[in-house]
Length: 254
Ligand SMILES: *Cc1c(COP(=O)(O)O)cnc(C)c1O
Image 1 (cartoon, rainbow, N blue to C red):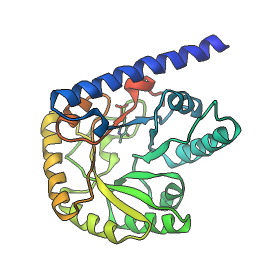
Image 2: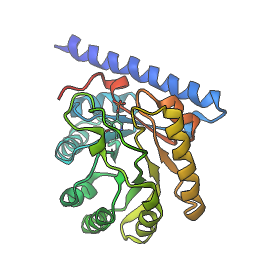
Image 3: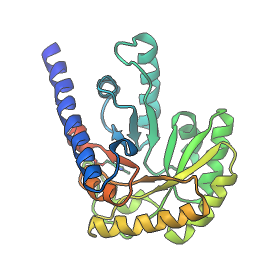
Image 4: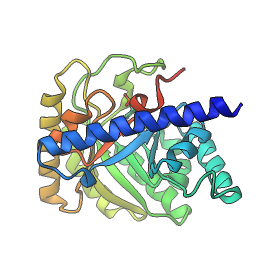
């Protein structure tokens, strides 16, 4: 039994080290400090036990994209941390990176520390109400759509088009609403690069949109961009948060 469990911990240690080395190399090649880029390990479809293994390897930030799975996993993590500090030495910061249905916003605001995917005004209101109801402050990013993406996400039937993201023309309106929403803190911008476009072109455009946002909201310094396949390009274009799943945890099963 323990050989199998040790294998998983070993595997995660190796793939995590590889991704951290990629981030460091990408930062070095553009003269940025590796400490300025936060690695969010996307643990969707993987169990709380993997989150605990990652935390023991020093991972402080995890990403989830479905409320039902995330809320159950976070409850399990809280329980693990209370039962055994050796198993889970700290509760990781929880980043919600998937589309939020308006009727799930109250739930998400109860456990997410950061919501990356705010793309409509109704969601601002719903998250704000949820954060107030839970007595929490939630960091939020405006998710912008960088175009028509149509390739189905690996392991799910969800199309990239269903990933959401506001039209770039709506960023200002959403940012202003977020600045005024009690319980929410505007932190920056997030995007998923469309698959059919060169990521460098998408992330260059994203950086431009981020600079415009920063001109109006100087504290919105976070730029969440880059996944397993394109984190180097995102870092070259100013990403402060990369969201990496499969390169660390392996392929996701539906
Ligand atoms: C699943 C997901 C990721 C991680 O993707 P990988 O290719 O596995 O690294 C990043 N961002 C979002 C929004 C996701 O849904």
